[in-house]
Image (cartoon, rainbow over all chains, first blue to last red):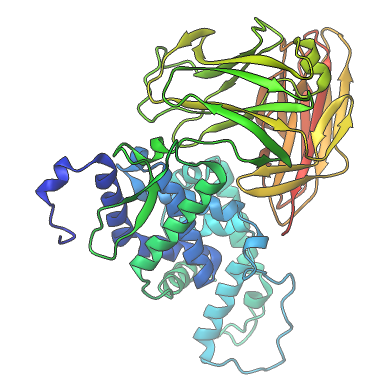
Length: 188
Length: 333
């Protein structure tokens, strides 16, 4: 049966069959997008896939309730699962407390843009999980403070303060702070 | 760094994961559903494998009810064979009936009862605004002691409650004797009245207290507890406080929890034979939960990315019993 072609027999299929088909269609259509969010949170391909599958499994048990808007529900599960998951399961995610000292005048492969990108990505990885989630929701998902607050189950004020703290941490992250400013030739 | 840099970086990085195999992904989801069900719920009666309609790729099988009804609702919890180190002796389930009667032989009184209850998604209890409670009596036991009540779970998330006599003394108080038997009656209630909720699933199990326990203030605390398939261990520093019947004065129990890589499980409550007064639990000054005296609540998971201050405050009404506040850390396998 073609994916987008509705089989008339579907109308008389058992409810569980129809529900499973809807679930699988959702996975096919939307899970890549959710995987990207998972990757931004976990910073590891395998962990992102694991987080996504875990979230989908949780969503499946409540599918009959969330069919009308499953994506936002799964995103909520995904972000909250990430926030409460712990390092034991996430052996791949052990952000270092201290940055390795860059060697003086050490050339960065790939040029200044690539190096700046790597530094920013690493700095995002050093954010606490909750702050990282707020940053991803606000600046990747482009969600409002109110929507972010609702998804995370916290107040808009907390979203605002967590966002401010996260951005402040990013701006003073040593990797970013120590980078020479290409426009001035000095440090930022 | 400005916000445009950040947005650009996130979009660039987000495109890094390559395309994945959808059949692999669905197989992974299926495995997790199955694993979760092994931990928390097993299909009622004879669980069946249902081959589901597949859209566009290799067939996937999920475990579900075989009657074509909603899968989540077909998943009836069964009490685990082992919980908190305690081994199950026997269990009974309603199997579609609206009540349950069970004559239980007791070889020993060092046992506890645990219940489970799940309402179907389309449950329509008589009072839509009142919780549906699973209520049971042991040897008639009306109204107290020997009568217990716990709220049913919904949305595929069954409640599991340890409630009832927990010590030999408790059992004796309700008339139970070693090598005797007790009669357990279970039904659904709203506002204290029996009700019927078609599709509701519930059960009650008897467990041998084989798990390690410590006793503090006369209250037994399990050393190991199981939550969602993970094991947590009681940490030193747990607090208990025996309350005198002193009216009009709040009593507070405080506990600091450490920073940790994993969430912590907080056990709290007011172990009192008479549930006459309320308490509240706060975390760093913010409300976390409220409850009533009578029993300990199911453990609550809190994040531990930072230290926290917990405060359990029993409201001023006159009541005795023991306040309990403890935390458990995840046991690394």
